[in-house]
View 1 (cartoon, helix red, strand yellow):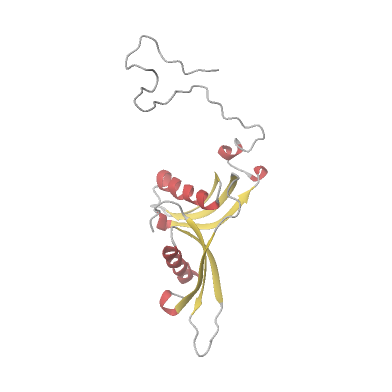
View 2 (cartoon, one colour):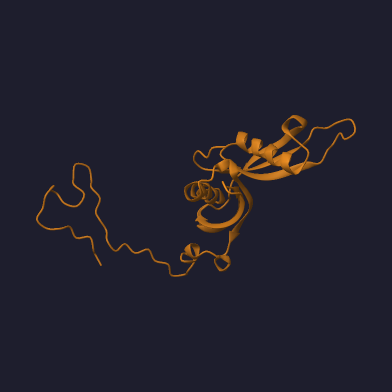
Length: 183
């Protein structure tokens, strides 16, 4: 599986194909993060083959629906429990992210795991996700934004260059340095 762009959240429902002995077998529902519906169905069969004696040739997909978050205007804290395979073995991990949507937090997870741990997307298995309150945060990076009076100061601003103009002054060479502190 490749992660091209944003991850999406899918609910995939499938079951073993009906037989004469069992015409209506038990259905299984799974929440899966994938870039598109085709990969979501493929991951569903991957996990079902691990958990139950089922595979694509002996089963059928009943439903595959993308789950869209209702309120995507407020920044929330997310906790993600995962398992991944590295060169030395299998590891469990817990990570926290801040994002507007759960799918954005999962995209951050895949990107960070690729950068920090050189983990391929196919070797990451998301066990559980949860939206966290400020009091439930464990990591220092998320806690610093969870305070009531958070400020984002801009101590040293540099005016950007407009079209046909230099970034800091009107000319290429000047005798005085630019002022970047407007405190």
